[in-house]
Length: 192
Image (cartoon, rainbow, N blue to C red):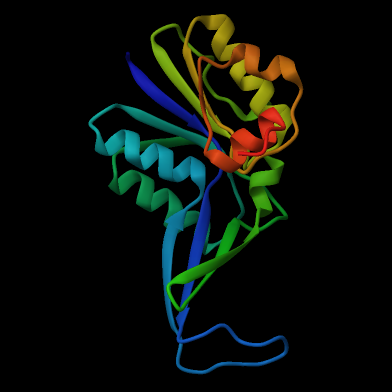
């Protein structure tokens, strides 16, 4: 295997910790906030690089400070980010994660992630690579990229999260599918 190529989402996670969640319309003071690089795609790329595998990230960010932070984070973790395209208009993806009483709730503003297209690929897939994707970017881009990678003989991995209805032929281009119990239930129609 020459490298892992992750096609997917890049978000800035804004984690807000408080003693409890505010009631609708209420404002709470005294919360802590942390900004952390995230998005399923970015997280997969960082994990791959930390395992010592040459890794490239392909995705879309906005023209803003979060984009620069995410690119810097990728570089600091030895991930090739030359495939991360800056798009005009939408902001870089943001996930607001509210943590209270040992639980969390997450709201994602996908932003530039929803403007990612297969046309943004700078390199064609090769036989000796592993291509990874998830459902946090447009389904059409994911389907086309995985089909191209599969045709080239690359290994393909798809994390079906967050679950999205998809054409059955998409899975014909996937060597390894990653699902949790909820995603498996959606994919099979079974109550687990």
